[in-house]
Image (cartoon, rainbow, N blue to C red; front, side):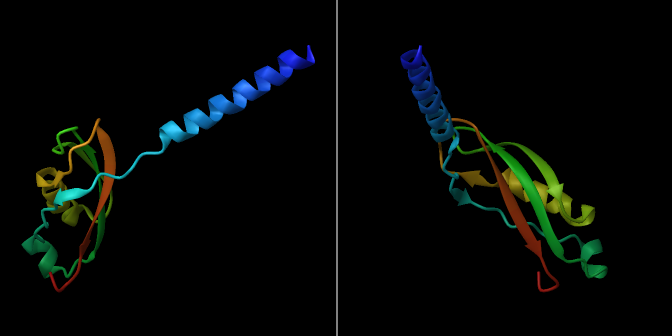
Length: 107
């Protein structure tokens, strides 16, 4: 009984370790990051800040989907459009990354 329990414990620990290693993923490198343009309306209001965009990247490096995670709505549309046009290095499978676009009055 003790031997069986010890074997089960070892297998359980090994299984957890394998799962933990499988979940670690390397970030996809940006091949071409399109810079967003700040809308005229935002310039007039002197809007600044950071917009976070989640991108789903296809294995060939193209952006399949985007989703705004945060930032001013007036700035977000330009950031999302730029993210959709950006490209990444090819990878073995579809991945998800977060891009941050910083807008300042100097833009």
